[in-house]
Length: 212
Image 1: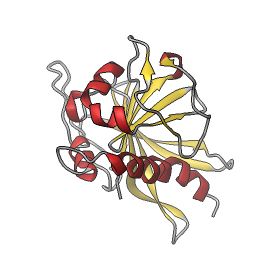
Image 2: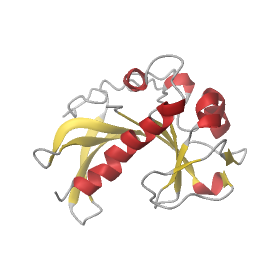
Image 3: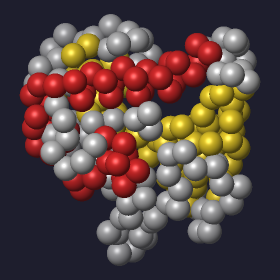
Image 4: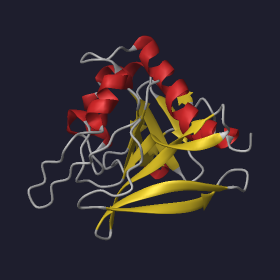
């Protein structure tokens, strides 16, 4: 299957590894992870000048159009040199989110359903009032059990640290990380107890995905 490795890297690694790892020793205090992700994908943003609500969630069909936004179909090169598609959601010139389609292993092809949502705009918040631009210390404070007990830290090829917590991934530039960096492109990532970041470290992207 020419897309299998790509999907595993993009989808299964996001969910199977991180969700199993995070929930093994740390059950969420306010509902299961799947419900949390679904709620977050429908969250609105209390920005009086430009409120945003994205009317889609994980598992929905990728919308052809969305009132107040433009959706651009974009192609990029996958890990095996093949063309892969993602969908950019924009408000004017601002990139709000990117949608990645699910993969049907039986048919060996991508579907038109949303598997992963990457959030790039600070105008959109997820649970516990976190958003792009939040301090990493705020993430730590919002998830004290997850951070102190079982956090998967993954270093990506583009120099980003992914903090895997409760089926969210909070992206932070590696230069903010204090201590020994984990292995680049490690499939499992590295579980680090109380990972440390510089005091001015901020989240620059948030990803969420299905727990199933």
